[in-house]
Amino acid sequence: MSNQILRREFLKGGLAGAVVFGFDPWNRSWVTETSAQFGVELPPLDGALLTDPASLNAAAGDFGHIVSRQPVAVLKPGSVDDIIRMTQFARRHGLKIGARGQGHTAFGQSQVEAGIVVDMSALNTPPRLIDGRVEAGAGVMWRTALSAALAHGLRPPIVTGFLGLTVGGTLSVGGIDGGSFRFGAQVDNVLELQVVTGEGRLETCSASRKPDLFEATLAGLGQCAIIVRATLKLVPAETHARVFLLFYAGLGAMLSDERLRISGERFDSVVGFVVPSPGGGWVYFIEAAKFFTPPAMPPSADLLAGLSFLPGSEQITDVSYFDFANRVGPQIEELKANGRFNLPHPWFDVFVPDSEIDDYGGDILATLTPDDLGPDFPILFFPLKSENFTRPMLRVPDEDVFFLFDILRTAPDDSAVVDAMVASNRELFELARNLGGKHYTISAIPLSQHDWKRHFRPLWGRLVSAKSHFDPDNVLTPCPGIF
Image (cartoon, rainbow, N blue to C red; front, side):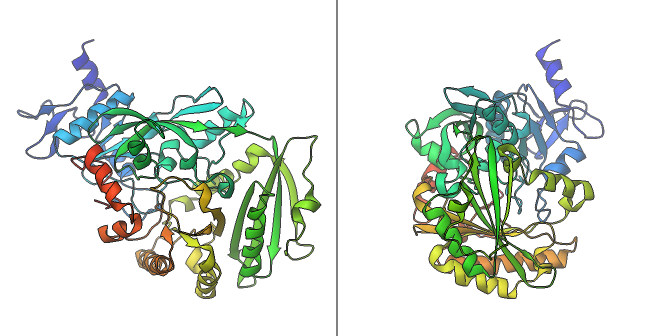
């Protein structure tokens, strides 16, 4: 079978059952072999370029279910070469192109209106462990990468609260979990990247090899390059986790104990939770975990010494390490089964300086209601240390300790309610910014180019320079609205 016939077999689209043959640069549309007299033939692909309505509609949404921007095509790459070819093609013909993993952003960040979305989930070949590190394609889920490492008694220092996200997706924004106070974000634990730049060049970069590209890509929201493979640091893994749920009378006591727990690093994971109380108001508790391998057992009394939780409220359980890491997975599957996963999720995520978090969080909780949150997800307080956050594009407050504060909202399918929640997010963001806070870029917060410039200050010039160098025609990932 000739290369041309193979190409046509792969490029089956949904244009009235026709076959996508090329691109018409004058009318800015895909053309079919039967309808086109003029057009530019597509490059050879190992995968498929999809234009059917179902594929376009799927790529037009994300977990937020708030913003919808429809592309003109979805690339399902059969190889990294496909991403190189289509990025070069997009650049030549003035199209935008961007990567999408699981689409777990809340405000359309991975969408590409009237452009090409690259479905990175196709780059999911099994991870390889080499010399105590793991190499994973960008479309590999963290669940898969973790399982591969655990088989060798190792683990990534930081995974994600939900393991059903892709490696490339979270490395494009940061990646936080309850152990980030010890190890930083996921982007702080990357040893090497393979990327496709906006020029359509395949590059390998690290802290010592093309460091400007490495730093611009990690937490860089796909502005300078598309991650296609990552080499990740690993640490020894324990087999079990002792999980402590400790309850508090109020926010101040909970935050105080979070600070105490990370100062001595007596736990391996620390997250503060706030959830609606059945009787009204809020319930405050910390989920902390200490990892261990039997027969060695954690000294529970020593771990809890000096803490100010409500006496007798503690709940202590032992689970496998994997079950602890995957604890959000069953909840997500339940939401998918009952349809609530498809409701709007105007999530709000900001980094707040430690000196401001008590008043900032307390003022919000004094006016927030359960209806402003929804029943599916909590409010979270992650205590973090600046010394462990080293990647420049992941902007965090200028204090030794800070908190990631998340209001994980679920809205009814009512545009007025969604709009009100998004407007509230904007107000809360401005308050946090005025206190020295930074937003975490997965959020549902409307932002202007001026907002982005302030966000990256004083590194805005560095990002502009990297964009100009690695994506000179501004074809990559348009929908955050940074450039």
